[in-house]
Image 1 (cartoon, rainbow, N blue to C red):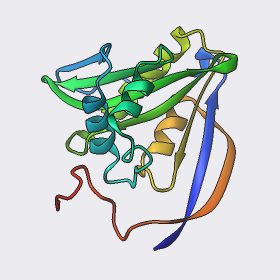
Image 2: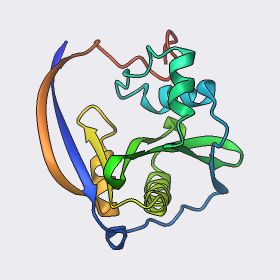
Image 3: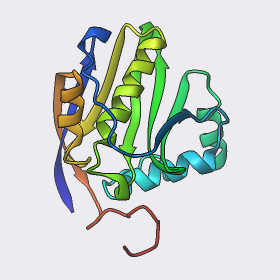
Image 4: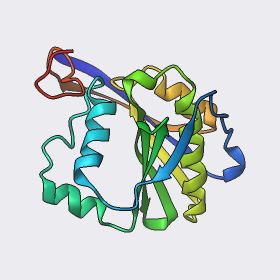
Length: 181
């Protein structure tokens, strides 16, 4: 099916604009995945994005994942609740001291628990620690319906919007490729 997709590009130009969100009431640990693991990163990507038409990286082979993750510019931070991965934020240091929130999201069973606001806050704080002059992110109408509001609540400002048409399957592939929900 052909759908119209709206994409918002947001930025934060100073750490003073970050409006952090407190963690919810659960046993939470946020830790950097310091050992590049294509298997784990692909799990996070498909588990978070499977319900939102995330498909760009599904065709990546093991070597491409490994090459991407082995770059010193990429950091993956994972939120764990009671030892279970609950979400992640991937940061990429870019030229001119930009840091992109490349991917961010919460696994389906952990949405609606205020985890997203807190994990985004921790990730953006880390982006500033990477000596960023600008932290930016993009989201679109195919993403979580809470994504744009979360970015704005944390202090990001929209600097550009684009609309394009995109051919999509009838429904997202889900977190488990080939398995029915």
